[in-house]
Amino acid sequence: MSVDLPSYLGIPAEQLGAGTPVRVRICGGQADLARDMAEAMLRIIIEAEQAGRAATLIIPVGPVDQFSLLAEQINRRRVDCRDVMFINMDEYLDAKDRWIDPAHPLSFRGYMNRKFYGLIEPALAPRPDNRVFPDPQNPAAIGQIIAARGGVDACFGGIGINGHVAFNEPPEPGETMSVEEFAALPTRVLDLSRETRTINSVTVGGEIAVVPARAVTVGMKEILAARRLRFYCNRPWQRAVVRRVLHGPITAACPASLLRLHPDAELVLADYVAETPDIQLR
Image 1 (cartoon, rainbow, N blue to C red):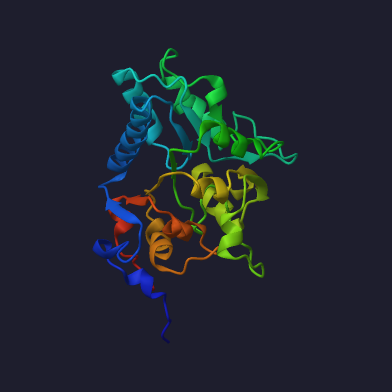
Image 2: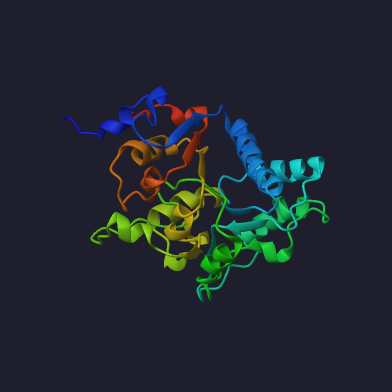
């Protein structure tokens, strides 16, 4: 019995991104990718400083390894980040739609405090007011902050197994949404998909019950309005989804495919992510 697989799954590494406006770079292993991401963040911070202003970045927790490297570079190079605005993409919520406790093993706020802000020398670290997470009680505040800062210099991120960007989940089966409608979605509270909760449970031993069912996320509206999009993929399971993002249809069913509508988007892949997916019966 033959099975018709999407043709994009067979696209070789050297042809990824061909015919699209998204630049694709292959960047060695996981450590190389983390170093590249840290350097890219620092470069934007320094460029803004040289232009006489402080940078505004939207950043993910996932990938994660870049943050300790970025803290190290900030300290070593004495980069003043007190006025730099770091807007984290998202955070998990509890049953009452409040941020989960920072002590929770999946808390992005807890991670950022331990692995980034807490590693920067206090005299160089972003002020507390510049360490922003979307507020489930006031999601619109993110748009207001961005407007007051004159826009976002760059949005960094990863890509979920279902193509999500931040926690902007694709419509559920049976739901329809145009690309234009999806691109206009603002910062909001939402249910997480089963796919997202399942793949994210890997970091807690595969126990999906530990993964919260709700989250608050920066919207596609704010992400796509950033002047630069810089997305990084370091998981072996992303081999298929990056091909769907780059060469499948542009659709709300694959949120990251909307990167192809942006004038300055770059996708950076670990070499093993760029490899063609190995799809066969075993």
